[in-house]
Amino acid sequence: MGKIARIPYDWPFLKNNCFSSWSPPQLKQRVPICLIELRFLFPQVPDDLPVHGLSETVVGVLGGGQLGRMLCQAASQMAIKVIVLDPLENCPSSSISNYHMVGSFDDSATVQEFAKRCGILTVEIEHVDVATLEKLEQQGVDCQPKASTIRIIQDKYLQKVHFSRHAIPLPEFMQIDDLESAKRAGDLFGYPLMIKSKRLAYDGRGNAVAKSEVELSSAVTALGGYEHGLYIEKWAPFVKELAVIVARGRDNSILCYPVVETIHKENICHIVKAPADVPWKIRRLATDVAYKAVSSLEGAGVFAVEMFLTIDGQILLNEVAPRPHNSGHHTIESCYTSQFEQHLRAVVGLPLGDPSMKTPAAIMYNLLGEDEGEAGFSFANKLIGKALRIPGASVHWYDKPEMRKQRKMGHITIVGPSMGIVEARLHSMLGEESVDDQSSVTPRVGIIMGSDSDLPVMKDAAGILNHFGVPHEVRIVSAHRTPEMMFSYAMSARERGVQIIIAGAGGMVAALTPLPVIGVPVRASSLDGLDSLLSIVQMPRGVPVATVAINNATNAGLLAVRMLGVSDPDLQARMSQYQEDTKDDVLVKAEKLEKDGWESYLNP
Image 1 (tube, one colour):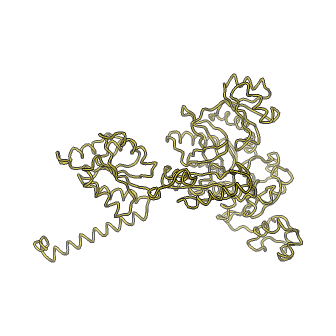
Image 2 (cartoon, helix red, strand yellow):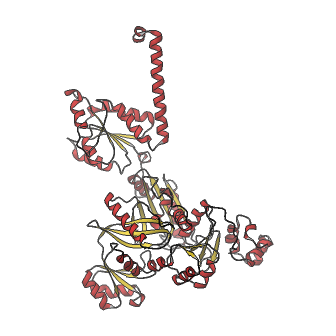
Image 3 (cartoon, helix red, strand yellow):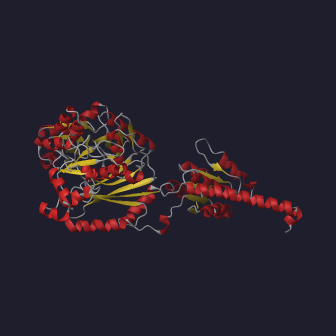
């Protein structure tokens, strides 16, 4: 007796739902005596905890909050054993971790005792006792990321110094020790400026704005005084806040997730949009900054790199987190490898997974406490109820026992075929507007023409799309008579979820959108459509328009279906069947002609 391997598989459930809340006499009435004795004789995870998953190593996590909880959820899918250290008996990770040690993750003795129970030590919060981690590393304990990285990152001023030494773009900064040094910073940087605490600053805590020299003293007082450890940053006139999740393997391989935009509410991450709606060159620049920042650090794991996009198009690094991050929660639903699975892969030495998105667009909405206590729970429950009716929405509830205002209680991720559609679904969930019947069936193809006189031809494309069940829209958009309407349509089509445009002509539209455009030359009363054909096929280099025969909108519809079928197996299968049916139709006609003769065939 005394081996955890002999405990029924659901022992974590028993431990967290029985042992933590009942006294020993009560336990004896509810649980077999062998389990009671096991709990009190061996309140620990033994060295021979059986592991039969992707890693034979037990991963220990300092911290049992929502990040630890989602790490445990990812680990369960991989059969990797995860144990957590957290001071709260009912922390979010407690009910699903393989073992929860109740204790402080910044207490040296407790962390050292916890380290004996795991093969790899990682963090879900950087505010831990780094000196202890350094001591453990000297003793041979495997800490990922390395203690040196945690030391740099948990002090935001040291972060700035470190990254500036590696030529990573940052807002200008200066340490301040008294009012005189603060005034010098104000003279140097101008106002407004940002005063920040070096340590224990997160979710907007530890930041204060001074709009003038007069406000310096009050801002410093709000942060606990100069003795608390402060520095000043030059104000960054940003237009958007961006973030990149970066994974670093034990072999120093690095993969970056798509750039996202983060939107904050009262300095707390409120909404994350993936991917960020910024030009490709900005995405590339942000990814390069994130890659370079993580390359300068030591150890494996997932890192979050937060950045400012300034008015003049610069990317400035704001801060880095050495762990999974709020800006990466969307990856659970939107990416092939979630940030939590990726962190586990990285720290245990498995190959890094594909970080690319498997859905065109996603929004993560943080469920922040809107009120205290039951009123806050009631509000959250109503919002969750609405979310469950939204297409593409997934709810994550962190199971925190206490509701507080602005506390992160959960999050909702919505995925969809375009950012415009996902945003509409979010607004519907929040009660800001309703999603009409058409929004749930997004047009994948837009059919446009300059006049209703083109409709008798263009209807054939619509007929093909109807046959294949492809949602589409038909619009009159004249490049000559309503140029503003054409411009608006071309610029907004992608955001609304349109993937292909079929246009009567189409040259101007192709110049305005990155979407593929299929041009249909329409036969007019003069020149038999040759003018239309030549205007399409003679488009200048760099503005391609796929062109079909004059008046052959049927082929335009079929080409659109084939293009969509590249990423839609069901549609591709329908196209294969259509080709078979066409073949069979020809064979039937050939047989009839051969049997009946041409005269009877033409005069049935």
